[in-house]
Image 1 (cartoon, rainbow, N blue to C red):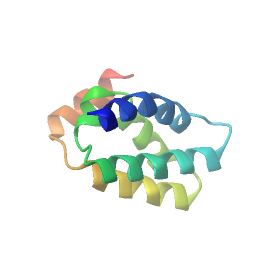
Image 2 (image 1 turned 45 degrees about the vertical axis):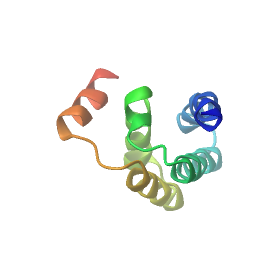
Image 3 (image 1 turned 120 degrees about the vertical axis):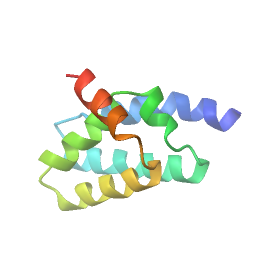
Image 4 (image 1 turned 135 degrees about the horizontal axis):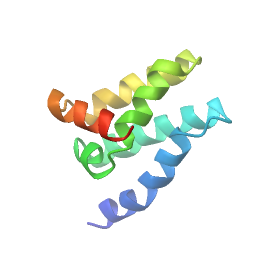
Length: 97
């Protein structure tokens, strides 16, 4: 219970760092932290639903970041967070625009 409340405090900060265009290194560290945190806590699928801005932020990095290291970390995180229904993916991606 305490771990999930800590994750709920950390995830908004991590998601904010994912969207920071000023530092590629900061984005890479945020993605890696997200993967380590969610993977070790078993916090899967729920982040997509609880934080609808997460998937669009990850997809933006995957499509636009020039650093391959960061893009590779995003692919790892997507694997850690797990599969999500394609209809829900469309909803999350297009409702944030």
